[in-house]
Length: 252
Image (tube, rainbow, N blue to C red):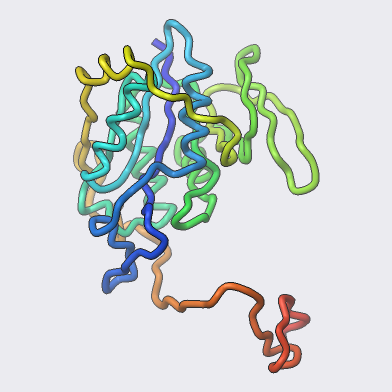
């Protein structure tokens, strides 16, 4: 059976989130929501689904996100897998991509992996490309529309000054822009079928990772300081320190 994988992140729903002593988000103490751009990935996957195709959602996060992910079954998702382990906490984008790639390998053969282009809580936009690199497959970023093509996918993607259309071979990773697809509503029949399905929870050991590859230990970057800045234009010390300036004119 063909398999389309949609990667979904659980992000804080609150405007303010507490940090622990290592500057990690305290996800256990705040409510969670599905990342907005990832909703486009799920809908695009469901739109590409055929009779012989399975849509699998893969996520990494705290176990309390299981209830949110369970709701995706009612939309027509066939399988939901959550990577949840304290060893995975505090991962930077590289360690996160490594864990997701290990999870993908456990899911079996796939045709494509769809992701949101960025997450609300970090907005690095690095995961899709790093995931593709870890799996040694091509990546297309900032997708807006996907269509089936001969031996691949036709992708319309957003550039800085234009929109281009290209065809990418399978398997591949494609990241979707926010609101490029509107997630469908669950049907009554879908809700009934969802009651018989369960989210699968896998640990780091289940996907073949050791502690040195996960979380803070497996991260190449770490947050060492955090500042709070008020929104708006900031003072620029390279111009007039008393003036509000949005552009740094030069660095000595």
